[in-house]
Image: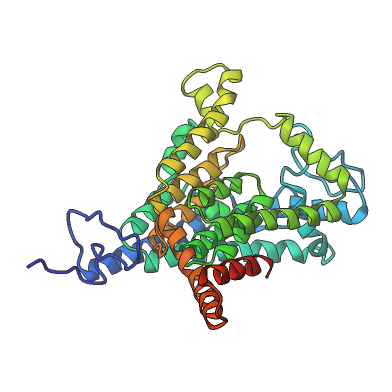
Length: 411
């Protein structure tokens, strides 16, 4: 007889279609698990303190020029004033430090992000503080929630994310100065960048998809994709899962929000963003695939720039290859979301919180075949009702099913 693991131990699994079959070589007692959870929570808040007081104290002032919240606010102001969203800036526009010497445009996000800021910008400087506080709360709550309810690979994954500062410093060829240095979670939480909100939307997409709510999953993924281009990889994950209602919801969300961005920002701004995206005017950042290939492997810059495209294609192929393992394929999708852009910053790695979400929220739907079977069972009652109606009327049941099927396509 094999003894079952204590429900609070790290060796205990969760119920669900996709169970955690990989067992750890040891099982921690409940009191040790509690210590692990407490330690992770203390590290989260410790890294927040280090980032806010030692490394980047300026992030505690979201209204200062040069912060992400200030740049979003400036974009909303330009739209409200009828000025060019992607530059050039007029003398009366709020300054954006780094433009045009470092950045090809005063904002690099799609027009929808600036449209969202139009009503916020009308509120004045307080809108930047509100946005910053909501982003901070969202990221911290997600990280702490994972530490409180996570098991096994969730806690291990969270520990890896909290320790990413060390390999990030190595890639950047700088000294790892102190614990909490270059913390992705802390920087994403305190910067007010869209990454925090996109992380929440990615977690929501997984939760909704794994709970049989495809329309919510597609809408969350589509919303994230309209805030930044990277999350467009999520639609490929939905396709390989054969979650067609979610794919339809994704497409509908992108179309609707695209119209909102077109009306709210104007045709010229949307055209300017398209030119910005296609012009290759954005230089690779120090954590991007292209930069790593150039600096670490010595590849020619022009050849290294193709690395981003190659990494994206390989990543999407791996997502397809692991389609029957929903958790693994979703984790790979999040990696594609991060590395498909030439601009990869420290805060982008906070998206890895979404990558470990599948081990917090088990998949109750399962493989692509099972998703199709679940959808078939949901349609079965309508066919059965049509069959009974046809039998009661003295007609062949097959004709009744055909009529019921045709009628349902128009409802």
